[in-house]
Amino acid sequence: MLISQIIEGDALRVAVRIDGKARILNGERTVYSLALEAARTGSGLVELVERIGMGRTVDLDAAYREGRIASPISHPDPTHMHITGTGLTHLGSAATRDSMHKAAANDDVAQLTDSMKMFRMGLEGGKPAKGKLGVQPEWFYKGNGFMAVAPGAPLVSPAFAEDAGEEPEIAGIYIIGDDGMPFRVGFALANEFSDHITERGNYLWLAHSKLRNASFGPEILVGDLPENVEGVSRIRRDGKVAWQKPFLSGEANMSHSIANLEHHHFKYPMFRRPGDIHVHMFGTATLSFADGVRTQADDVFEIEAPDFGLPLRNTLKLDAPTPVSVRVL
Image (cartoon, rainbow, N blue to C red; front, side, top):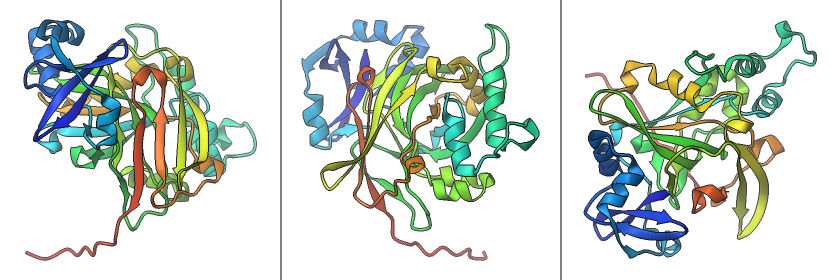
């Protein structure tokens, strides 16, 4: 089952896709209110949707073309959405990162970059046995709900950025229940839009490079993440494909388990505030930047994988400079 949100007039409506057919969920619910209802009643989302029922069919492709696809979950107060992620979690991700950071030439652990050391820690301890704690991953913060960009809307790169590159990822979508415990709504495609030149300048600038827009959706896959996710990431320029490459995700292609990544995010009490939404991105090993591609204004990023319904598309826009000065009160 896939769930999404479409805009109808001034309201959001929940669309549910089962076996390829999308229908509007009965009642005036959002995905956020639906998820909260499921958490509070102890129902699974599939069971709750079946109980509520669905009405008329909807053409999601047409809604996408018309700009009526919203982010698949949103909070009434965007400050209560947290967009975060983990890196060096995928097999091959260390090679991509090390090539950016000019890896050491030999295999002596003492000579390895911090990126490769972190990756090795994940290989050795990122998939602990059930009931055991695994090694913590690299973690970063992208911003709150004000940084979330709907599918089809532009990803805006700030004027001070040195690069504006896509990162095709899978994101876990979560809400925090009334008891302070996290519930997973499902998984979605995500573009963890980043500044790779800033990051390459010094890995301690990773935090700066990640404070950018992000997009996820258009649809949320309810249930477990497939062991093997095979997708394609591409850049369209002037109507033509300028770059394209397959990407892999799912635990079969990762050095960490999803459960381990979830544990090391939600172990912090500030990330377990009742009613909050979390969009947590699980990393990638595929970047156009690693292939020497420099993106341009009006490039279109497109990320797709068959299990996730509609592709995620966003156009790159470059922001104008904004003078900022601190004033004394």
